[in-house]
Image (cartoon, rainbow, N blue to C red):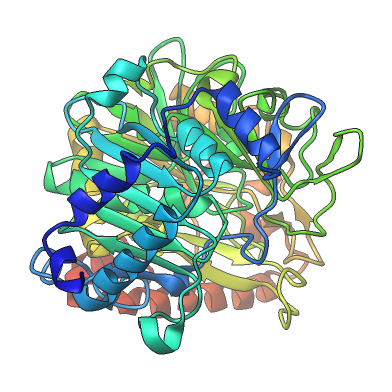
Length: 531
């Protein structure tokens, strides 16, 4: 059978999904009914389906591999993020997973798309052992309008997910019982050993980050919204920087919350749903998200009482509690999820050192530098052993999902900024007046005011002054924001203490940027920090 698999992956999948035990393109009601009957989850008081993911409550990046073959060998940026694995390992695991799923009483299949732009969208199929995983896929990917349309989809990539199949690292060639293996040549993503549904979403995003640039389309890990004047804004930022909060604006339509492409026509959402963190979620702070969690939504690892009432403040299962919901659960969602070219890009960072300006305007070269850097900070107490703020750098604000060399994405961004005259701002939602524990978090109302004025174009007309450490352009004033907080050096009790902390952070940027090698030297020279 092993030799047969080398050429018959698609045939074996087709045989599997053609069995009588296979459920194709079930509705939300049918999937909820199956999940409850199979005891995979429970309903909350609002009708959302709630499930637990067991041991794995987040992605498992060390267990993610790409098959090194004729297609991928010279294209993928191999390293810690894109770990290579052999065709033989993939084939052997594929055979075992297919046999495992074939022994199940029921499996679930969804056909759909990734990418709201029909010219470059990806046809995909998802084969699941769990019905609630299939509901997650139905929620997060773009849904065909009819079952007949779904039947006509010829899949370009297929996810095969078997959470209860656990690998044996000693014989299967994996790092642990869990594995996420991508075969670019076969168009298959093989997932096993983990029940965390987010692995499916992010695997397809990685595929889009591989395919879209080859078609001249920029792929981006960002949220996006659009105003009534068709002014499109993109928000890049890592967890805890305020990306979801700041892009959710009742006065603007939400294009999408996490994954987008930018082509010759403008911006489009890659997904059909949103995947929001719910820890400390409240109707006061995030009313749009709170209202979206209803029938047709999926909750992961949220603690719930016997009456079905979720406790969003309880992180006892994990701090990474999540809600997946169709984008049309948001009242002001833009359907279809496409819009014109961005006029403003916002890079969000939560600087716990308290040394970056609350807002600064970037040149194209600086934008490319900060895009490649992808900086935020990790707070004391968030992980064992961390007693003071630590710098965090995630390339292009999404390093775990980039199969190609980072400069591919940075150069595309620079070209698009030039072509469309986009204003780019670095916004610090972190600390002011000192580092974490000394200063205080930037007031959200001031950040909102700065962001709104940046998007409206008002801020670009202001006078700017260059800060003495980072060379960033700080606005002389922003309507509705105290002038004294705009230059962080002025907010510290000791200017000498500020300079020491700021120079230390700058050195971290410089050291981090060395990993990009010779291909990034031009970006560092024109837009980077100098010692």
